[in-house]
Image 1 (cartoon, helix red, strand yellow):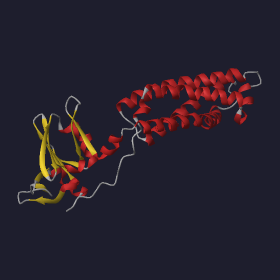
Image 2 (image 1 turned 30 degrees about the vertical axis):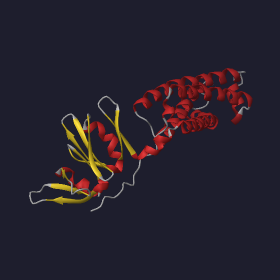
Image 3 (image 1 turned 90 degrees about the vertical axis):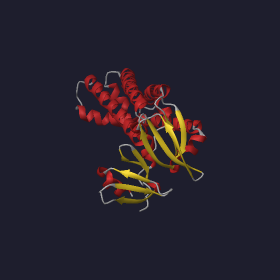
Image 4 (image 1 turned 180 degrees about the vertical axis):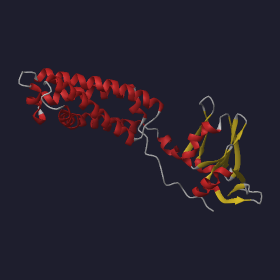
Length: 277
């Protein structure tokens, strides 16, 4: 039974530059000032009449809306900065976050305009109007910052990192990189007390490396590369499995394509492993 490659791949992660504090400053400042410039110079979507309110309040209300954008983005971007440091987002999640930011801004803008206008326009009608303001005006600085930052991240990308995208960097308990291996070269990994022993191929010879780490700590590193935890103390590379066997004592094992190596399989994980092959 040969192993099939996994077809499902996660969306590419947003570059690390998007999680830096300087990047958040661009998102906090530029959209607000761009909004003020666009409204005062071009006055799109009939905003002059809506913000003037018949009382000569156009510039005052425009300034207040700019401040609302600043405050909303300050709070939301600080929250994003804190979250990004712990959990890197993919592009789909990032675009949803930006959509949420523009929506929050629209709701607070609508609240302000309703209070200033004496609630003549129903709140949710005002929300729909403000969504138009926020999305059709702020989309330009959002798009510009995102594209420029993505280009900077691309130029700063380490060529060696691109070459090594199919490699696994194994780190020890002190978070220090100890060995870098091609994922396809790894046969299996076994737990040994406070260590894990990595068995891999090097010039068609089986070698091993003892790493001070736990099975749980290396799981996020190896599982995306096709290594399956077939038992509490074992990871096996699906790409090297040639057979899944059951002996007369109801013990399950997988046979690898190298030197007749057999790996034990937990009875509870037998069905899942079989489905992955």
